[in-house]
Length: 232
Ligand code: DX5
Ligand code: ZN
Image 1 (spheres, helix red, strand yellow):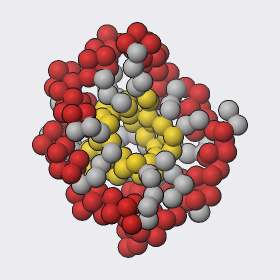
Image 2: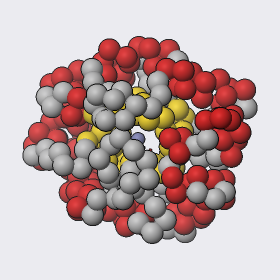
Image 3: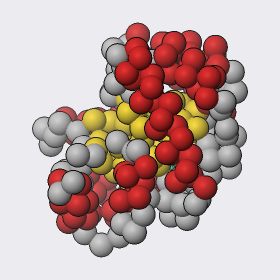
């Protein structure tokens, strides 16, 4: 059974509360924070993270708030996003390109008692031993593999990433069994109904989906996804 994280980047922000009601059967709400520096696009920040938390509380929904930071110097903002109600904070390996620093930032996030995610871009290749060091010493809860270049919703999934998920899955499985960890693999960007089965078969535990869910009836699309996974 996979976990569905719905990206609200494709939602209608004129009425966020109604949009969140429409996805109330999702497991997580994925909030894409972009700064126009780490990625070319600018999206939203603290206000939307806080508003989303308030809406979830108002509606009494037990959905995790999954904050994906596509920003430079993410370590400067962890405390703030934690305070605004993030349950998961994911930052990018490419924000530092340094294993030790990434390990420190993962630990900083986990010290707040929330989950830490580490994201990697499609073109980033980490040698297996480096990746295993990062996973076994940092112990992130989630390794998020980007299926597109971060920055925009509605992009096409990059085919080479299918193989990358498979390779990373092997390393993650080894770390999980050797060190008794439970690191999950998330895949974000370009996930559609046509490719979601292959993405899951290759190793994804968490599916981040934006435009495909908001196309048509989001609640029904989530049910459709859940039915697919439950059969497996
Ligand atoms: C891309 C974002 C994704 C995006 C997903 O930079 O990190 O989370 O919103 O949207 P779709 O599913 O439309 O690719
Ligand atoms: Zn994202």
